[in-house]
Image (cartoon, rainbow, N blue to C red; front, side):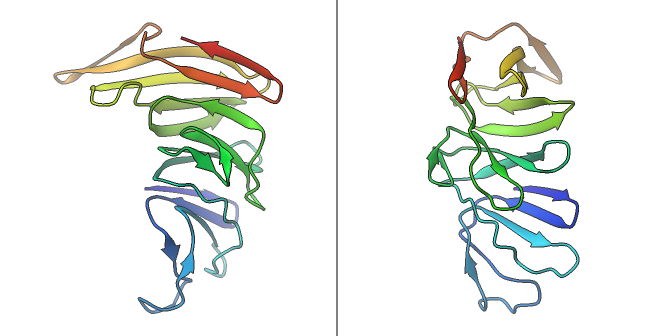
Length: 178
């Protein structure tokens, strides 16, 4: 489950298929929403923002200025457009943006700061690894990548993992990191 507040809006993501407006009793007033929804903080009203994904959302983050919402989880489509586990939409309309940085595993954490998107994802299902990468959003290049592996009570990090299979494409540009 993910919650993100930007200005007068609160965005939520998870594994739900409907939400109800503030004040509506359980089982009444439910509105279909495919794992993403937004509410007004001042009124509690459900907003029209409704990009929708086919499966669970685990992480939300906003770019500076709050105009773009980055969405991470385990999904194959975002707002009807092919996106593997990571994508971006406009904060007001929910329209899918051209940004594309597909991962081969569930995106569990996101943060955007200073024009850099940082993400944590599961590179190989069934392993106790968390892949990490930083993506400079302006040129669309990976600035760092590695893994964190659980070892008892310690976390070890380092190296570009052989399991990393990250496809990046921004408009017509793209790179592939293996």
